Image (tube, rainbow, N blue to C red; front, side):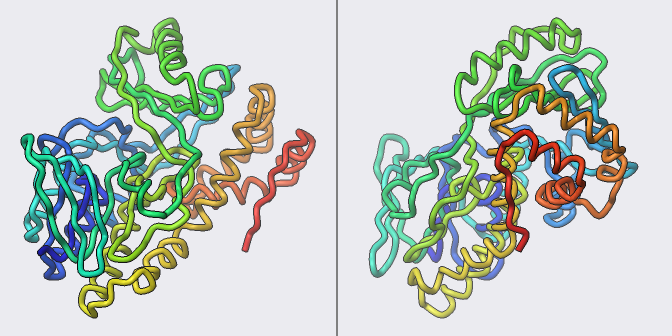
Length: 393
C-alpha cells in the first residue's frame, strides 16, 4: 500500500507528489495521458513571483512579458508597462514534464495511460481503480490527492459539492504579423462576459484565445476572422483546443483520507481563469497537511480540514473579490467598458496603477480595491446602477 496516490499529473498534482515524496512518503501518480509533457490547452502565463517561488526552469519559458495592451471594443487603448518582467509565458506541456521529473527524482512513481474509473474511500485506506491496457487494476493507498483537473467525474461522488459556474476556453497557435506585445480585448461583442487575447510566444507566433460561458466555438471563429482582417495574424484556418475552467471553488476540498487541489478544487483566478500559481500554492499546503496526518496516523476529515482553512486564509479573500468583479464585468455593456477605459486614462490612473510596483501581477484583488478607491471611477460605477459591493475585511 502506498502512502499517497495522486490522481492527475498536472502542476498541482506533481508538486504535491514532489513535496510528499521529498518528505519520505511512498507516492504514486496516476495520469490518463500517454506520456509526460503532452500539449495542454493553456496560455501558460505565470507571474515572475510564481517562477521565483517554485524555481521554474528557464528552459520551459517561451517569452517574458513586461508590456500588455488592453483594448476596449472601440479600440481604446490602455498600455500596461513596467521596466521589469512581470510575467512569463511557459510551455505548459514542458512545465508539466519538468514538475513530474522533479517528483520522480524524489522517488514518486508515475503510471501513465491509466484513466481512473472509480475510487472508494474506506476506513483502512483508499482504493483507486484504473483502466490500463484493457485491464482493470486497483491501486491502494492511505490517502488520495485528487488533482485531475476541472470536471473530473471522481468529484461528483465524494460529497464535496459541485462547481456550477464555469467557462469554456478556446485557444490556438497562430502565425502573427508584427505582434511583439501581449494584447487583451475587452469587448462583449468579441468575447461576451470575458475577454480575448493574443499572446506572442516567439517573433512570428502567438497564442490566440478567449473564454465564454457559451457559443465558444462560434466566437473563436469570429475572433480569428477579425484578427486576420486587422492584419495581425496570417491565417484563420486554425483548429483550436478547448478546456473548461472553473470560476469558483468547491464547497469543500477535503474529506476522510482525501484532499482536492488545483482546478479540481476550483482554485483558479476568476478574473483570468489562470490556475497554475494558485494550484501550486495550494498543493504545497496540501502536502504539508498530509505529511502531518500521515505521520500521526490520523487521516480523518477533521484532521485534514486544516488544509482548507490554510488555503482559504491565503487566497480565499482574493477569490471572493475577483469573483464579484467577474460577475460585475459580465453585466457591463461595451459602452460602459469604454467609459471605464476613458476614466482610467483621463485621470492618469493607468500611470498610478500599472507603474506601482507594490501591485503584484497575481493578486488582482488589490488592483480592484485600489481602483474602487478613486471617487470618479467608483462614482461612475454607481451611476451605471450595477451593484458591486466588496467587503474589505
